[in-house]
Amino acid sequence: MASRSEEITDLIYEFSKSQYRAKEVTPWVERVEKRYLELFDRDYKYSIIHNTNGEVCGHYPRKIVFLEYESSDNNKESFESTVQISKLQDLVNRSKMARCRGRFVCPVILYNGKHVCRSSTLAGWGELYGRTGYNYIFSGGSDDTLGEAEEVLEDDCAVRGSDIKLLKYLSVHYICDLMVEKKKVKFGLNVTSSEKVDKAQRYSDFTLLSVPYPGCEFFREYKDRDYTAEGLVFNWNQDYVDAPLTIPIRFTSNLNINWSEYQSWDLVQQTQNYLKLLLHIINSDDENGLLVHCISGWDRTPLFVSLLRLSLWADGAIHASLEPSEILYLTIAYDWFLFGHMLPDRLSKGEEIFFFCFNFLKHIVCETFSVKKKQRRKNSQFKDADFTVDDLCQLKDTSAPSSLHAEATDPITTGPQASSGRKGMPSSSNSVLWNRPITSEERIPNVITEASPLGSFKSSSSSSSNHSDQNLTRTGSTPLAVPGRRPMIEYARSGSSLSTDYGSWQIVSGCGSIHDLPPVPSESPLPFSFQDEGPSGRMCTFVPDRQVRLEAVRELFLSAYSSTVGLKSSSPSPSGAISGLLEQFARGVGLRGTNAII
Image 1 (cartoon, rainbow, N blue to C red):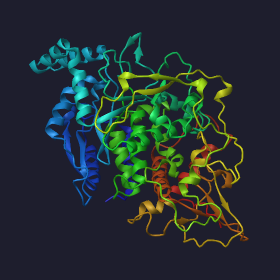
Image 2 (image 1 turned 90 degrees about the vertical axis):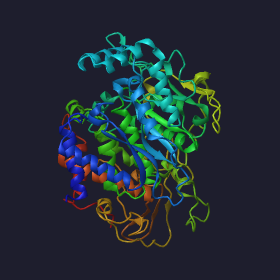
Image 3 (image 1 turned 90 degrees about the horizontal axis):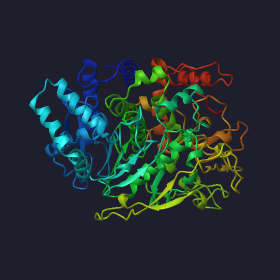
Image 4 (image 1 turned 135 degrees about the vertical axis):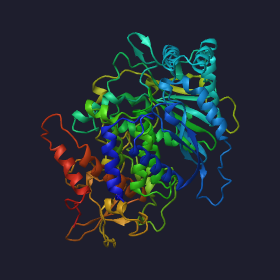
């Protein structure tokens, strides 16, 4: 039996060579199907939505997992599903025409009894009618397909109505649209639509969020900059970009984010802030789920679905029994490969959004991305102020804006996005819309902040965040006892929990970037650090379990990716960025020792 690291390597290799199609199943795909079902079964009771030979959707898994409840809970009545799988299957079959490429609303994550779903955007009528005719012609003119076509043509609302019924049956109330355009236009024709521009306002019962995020083409620039996302800002002034950022006020007021400046954010900061928003949504409502989609639902959508899954897993909130290698396998196989991400095509074009996803984990290790309830640390080492890990992680530059700039916002009332009066649902009648063009000067990321009384250092795990994290250095005290260090990769290979073998204290490198730079205090990825006065200058750091887990996943991915796909520089890199990447890959696979501070 292959080791877990070899299992990941084999998965990425096959993924990079072939596109998944439900009608063309190989023995290797069958083994992947068996494996992801085993991993889901570890923590959940589930049912199967059947997609045999891709008859519902040609680029969805043949066996779509519907998670009913966590089987590891002693109190199983807490979040037990009330969904009937036969009715769900029927709604799926009826609603598949409503969305682009037939990629219907599909539940993929279960968190506290709520479903996080994925899909493509709404199909335009041109695609809907065209696909219906196409299916009829290539089915040999069967009566079933003809009847389906006649039903669509007779009632424009029938398919949309089935889509809405499916959303409500899954208790989805929030729809997060990542498109940068209101409608996708090709050759002057609207080829797709979206909920936010539905003229009949059929989605008025849902809370709609327009959170425009660059498409996969933008990640060619990420690759061309030697895989550096810091400082990479999307051009919002392009002709086709017409979707504003629109978020309900009750969400914008709780995250300490200046949303009006979203067009000046670089790729790191934008991804961080959008992930914070999604986590806040699913953690603030006890009853209702979330749908995330882009245009086709196979690039930007798996990016955020995968980040959500890994972030919640790192908190112990989902997939509680899975080790780093297992959660990595699950999210690559299920969220990316079997849901149709075209990795061979994206690699040939240099659009490395897949690599960006897992390398980005270094930017979400901080406790500010945790959904755990905030708890104060006991026996704090700080005598003058009782700070928690979260307090230190969220320390903010006093000069940063504490509220939205009035001149940059345009509060609007969006009735269609208001709550329909569901029990337990707060009113969502007010949203804030931003669509302000910015000047080139405003695009320059603000990375220099005034020093606070505690001392300010830029964190590499959130180096482009709109608020600066702080490091607090403990000096003039007795060195803290620290157990021996094991590389993150070894945690993944061991069969034990990450947090039990060696406790929470580790000596770690100060370099949190994929580029192998010398560890310096100003680049520490940690919420705070302790430094002794010893001659060795040893730095002792408290590493949260969340960070240990995410770094283990990232190191496993980098090791497997380097030995299969590898990274290609578009031009000689004077900065040595690519050599730094390869150096870290070598460390990950054990060819070289890690940089320990001794």
